[in-house]
Image (cartoon, rainbow, N blue to C red; front, side):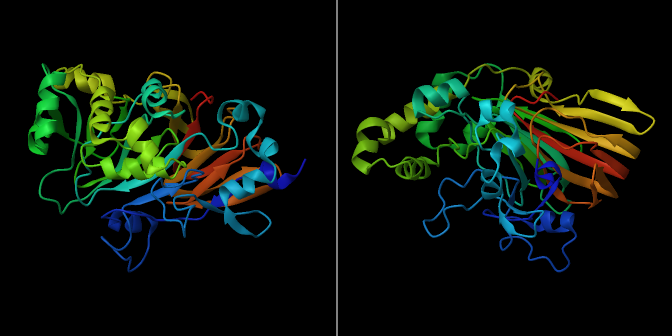
Length: 374
């Protein structure tokens, strides 16, 4: 047994694509941060998934790097591939292979993200030939105070929305009407939402969230036709094959419209369906661990948050995990070592770390792949 594979690893912070980034820099304590437009509105944390429209000169764009315990700085997937079974465990690999099995991000919405949906896993396989759909979740960890309206999200169909009505405005390219068929409501720090396949949604201006999702980078929206063509091109299909089998505009539109689940409801019922109550998983004199997203929402991933003033174990799940320190300071302690913790530190946890505890005054989020029960 190599002890390097049985201890936490510090992740290298990154920032990629999109319009935003100021709140990520602020959260990380970056002095004189680059700010919006320049920084990128997303960070992919502990990712072994690459951006689907990555350029040939940077094919691993989106993949996370790690400070290896032996001193090397390398891609996390490269480090894992040196000893996958010892780092990930047989149970995890049987479900997720050598990938992490979950994709964790920061999203900083300087502007509203586009209205979109993602296919269910079943629909992704049937219509797109993909193993994963893109069920996902948002945990609001901050908001901007200099936006035009209070931070909000768009989530779920209103009562009475039909496929015919949605398709009418889609074909007209009338985004305002499409958004008007969905619920829009204010959010605050600490709110958490599950976004199931087939659900219309858009992250609103002013929201800074942790997104936890299936490890897939494909989005279906009325403006994304060209990006989806690129997606299939990178999987080795010729343009002729795409046109013939999948990707005429008509076929794309039909598959996208089929991916929505048209089951609108009241705002109250919508929140009951998709907003997490964050139930307590365990507690003690040290604090508590809550389920942000868990088996009540999905079996494809989960995430929990530990609030500790003192010390507590980090429970083994039989799978690796990704950790983010939301606030406070302290340290991780395990048999044979320790690691200092402070706000915004990002950590990869191999599946089998003996005696692992968190010590201090800390708020920590843990993100788990499919097969790990919260």
